[in-house]
Image 1: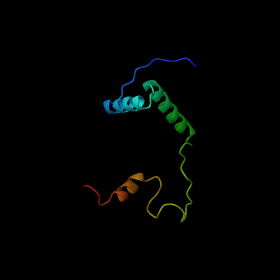
Image 2: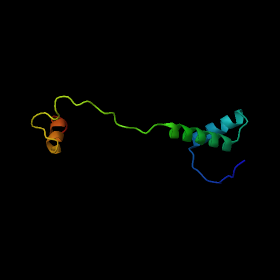
Image 3: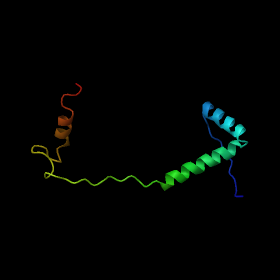
Image 4: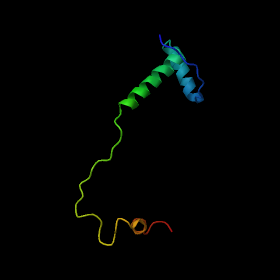
Length: 85
């Protein structure tokens, strides 16, 4: 068995009650539940591929006439026209 590190964590009362109830029902320790949960989350998250933006096909040559890519104020103004104040 490997080395262990002691730590303190804050857990919501409702989550702690659920943990204690399950640990008692399944004859487990709180520690074993926490270790299993952390192990699962770490494995799931490390197995996820990082998000990447999908390349899109650009049709029509870019911006509509009157909308230049360096004029974001005009683009924003048009996108929000008629909304709010």
